[in-house]
Structures are given as C-alpha cells and as structure tokens.
Length: 155
Image 1 (cartoon, rainbow, N blue to C red):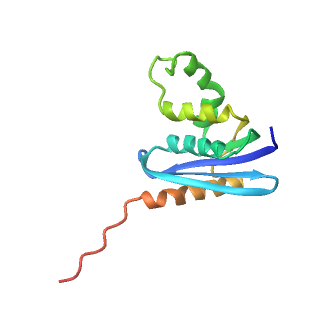
Image 2 (cartoon, one colour):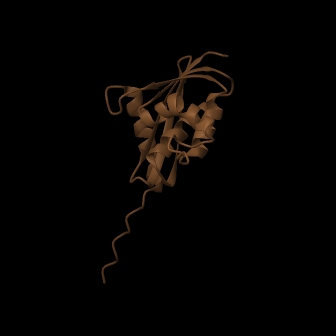
Image 3 (cartoon, helix red, strand yellow):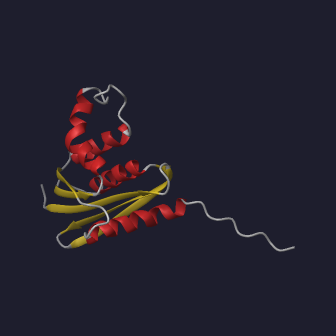
C-alpha cells in the first residue's frame, strides 16, 4: 500500500428521483483533487454511492483510505449490510432484491482494492470539506435541471 488518502464524498438530488450530482475531494500528501458528475434522472442514494465509487476508482494504486460521508445509507450499507446481502445472493433480510445492487457491487469491488475506513460526518454541520463536496455535488446536478422556458415574444 502506498500512503494514506483522505476522501470526502457527497451526493445531491433535486427531487428523489430527479436530476442529481455527486462529488468527491481526494487529499494525499497535501494535494487535493476534485471529482464530480451528474445524471438527469437518479436518486440521492445512487449519487451518494456513485461519489464513493468514482473516488475509489480514481486511485491509481492500492491505498489506505479514510472515506468521509454524510450518508448513513452508504456507511451502514458498506460496513454492516453488504456482508449479509452477498451471503443471501444480493437479497435483503426480507428476501427482497437489494436496491441499487449494481452500485453496491461496484462499490464492493472498488473498496476491495484498498484498505478503506468509512466515517460518517453530520451533513450541513461544521465540517468545511463536507460543505465543499455538497456544493460541488449541487453544482454538478445543475446542467441536468430543467431550464425555464423563455417568455414568449410580445405581439
């Protein structure tokens, strides 16, 4: 493993489902890299998962990672629920299909290339990096929001 990387991630959605954005800030040896993107129709949970996946996939070699998220869904899913889902063939304890299975599988694969510690931070609290990734995720969804129609020409 080479070095310890700090990652902050966030997802945002306007409507749920609706246009969404995701973002990550990666910090290594004092250097920072921002990542972001969006989709026209998605959910907040999908954007939270996508942010973590994209951040981990951006690492070019195996690393020790501290990944910070304000999503309990992401943190609990990857630290508690995923083991049972996999054992039950990607079914919940109620034997229903796991929602967002495609992204959970991708996150599982991405995290297994690294030594990742997932940390939960309170959203919209006093963490400047959490505020930063939130702003980046909101900005990333902007191109997918419906643009208002221009007013008609006066006759």
